[in-house]
Amino acid sequence: MYKVFFKDRAIFLGDKTESMNFRCLVYLWTEGENLEDIVSDFEEDENKEALFFAAEDVEALFSEFKHQFKYIEAAGGLVFNKKDEILAIHRLGKWDLPKGKVEDGETVKEAALREVEEECGISNLELSDELESTYHTYWMNNKWMLKRSYWFKMNYSGNEKLVPQTEEDIEQVSWISINQLDEFKANTYASILEVIKELKEVI
Image (cartoon, rainbow, N blue to C red; front, side, top):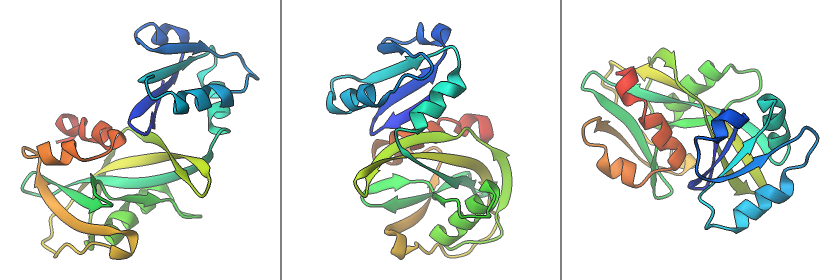
């Protein structure tokens, strides 16, 4: 099943049996059917908290869904230090985790490491487990974008000074204790909360 964040709401794409566990609008999709009008209606009606597309072939459904957007891929890290703190950035008024677009010829692992290093000013990161990817949409250059973000657990044992990448609108980079994340959680994105949910499993 796919979960795509549409601002702070969610669109789910899965099979018919999965849809029975959700209390939301459910549309049964048949191959070849266009989803544009349904997605547009969901965008305009903010009273609808969630939407579920169900199909026999979930991969075909997701492929059709992707065609409604410009699709891009990004990668980033849930970075831990020796003090059980995670690395966080503050950008455009929100707390976030370091991540960025995967460049041509780059693997997602290479992109994740590069983006964390560039956005936070640190090096010698140790790449660990791959976490669940997140999907979210946003409006840019007069079109809807769909971004898949690959996430990796990373470990950092150095003591370099954190340096925010200001040209990417990052105002602050901080280590935050995993036991003091209330402020972070209260002012971040729904897709980032999905990554933070995995803290107990990856520590």
